[in-house]
Length: 278
Image 1: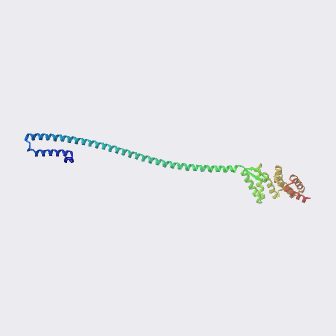
Image 2: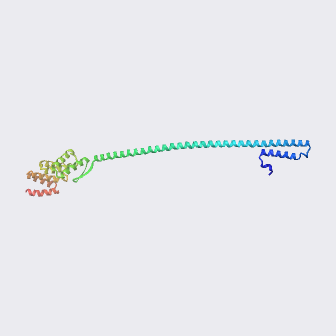
Image 3: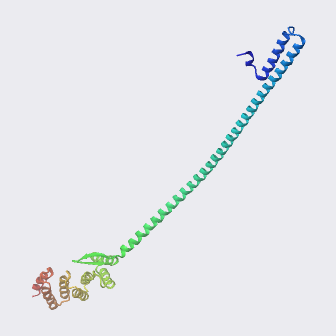
């Protein structure tokens, strides 16, 4: 590598020219004037050519550098534009995400409110359904088994009979007489009617209202001769007749009892009662 290769192009040309001039001056004494002038002219021409070459090289280098810088600036500008667009997109996405998040939160709140409202409506509907079912249950007939018979009765009908009979069992015969009479008037076709007549007759017997007791006992027997309480009703009629001092009628009733229901307990009791009448 020469000494001039480490020097920048423009500086290098000046150095080369200076070196040539110094060489020429050192050898000036060797040549005569014409030759010296010719050498100087050649040297100047070389320097001029060298400067032109160097300048052309510098111009080309500067142009390339300028173009590269321009291209780099253009690339940087495009990159900046891309960055700006990406920032805008990111900002838009963030905005969209915020809107979506807000909409989602509002939707969740609405869904929660709708769910609570639906649950409340469902609970209200279930309560109404239960209330209707309870009402229907209160209105629907129930199966009753009483005195060897089964029949259907309305809940109100069952409630009223149970209440009247409870008064009788409590020993309040006057009050139970009215309650049982009212029941028969209210439910004349009830399955409870035979038993209600029988207990009404017993309440009247306990109140010494023998005539009315006989009427109700006979009504019960005539309407329901196969009822399990019918033999006892006939025996009760005989007892009422005895209490009324009518042994003849009582004897006839007891004889009818033994004929109609010979195997009943009431008939066996009637036999013993007949013995006391003879």
